Length: 285
Image (cartoon, rainbow, N blue to C red; front, side, top):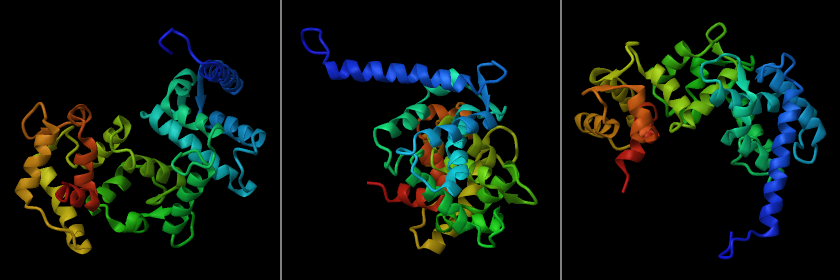
């Protein structure tokens, strides 16, 4: 809006266009809500995406054989963030109001953005990573195969706990579980990721991280720091810093609410699970 209280025609046109698109998308999604509940199951949402891909080939330019994997990748982000309790459904209105939908919608303006989770390039990168980890080619990821993720920077204790907390089949992770893992470790500042990682870190299952547990996680990463040739931080110093950053309500008991509230979850969790996170913290300006 300018000083006279007017807006440009372009701004107004863009607003109307997005409003119309929003309403049209809501109507389109409602067609897949066969029970008229206002929710979509993952299967229903994937059906919507499958039909959408076929109707917009100029945006979703991919080989037909990759379509089912793209649909799984795209749907998983919606369900990871909008269905954190794994009820198996998402609210249509909440989905359309979420930043995830905004990211998806932005493909219409720039469909080759490799930083956009929903771009074909991004999806192929994630799928390629999964294939590279699947050394034995059985379509699943074992605990030993996942240890090669990001060149092996994640602590062994954390990865062990991932396989305890995530759904597995014969102790192996399927593609959908891998997508959840990938989204979790790449969104450390999001409440949904924080809660999931916290479950993996809470070795005692008591709802908080005690000082001995935090020390245990640090010592697991210590081995990785040595392997990668990173500078080693004095144990006591880093533990004190972690609790200072979390600023827990109860002394020496970090709860998931503390991590969400403190605004430092990205740094704290990175230090506890990822050798790079600890190294970056040690070498910050």
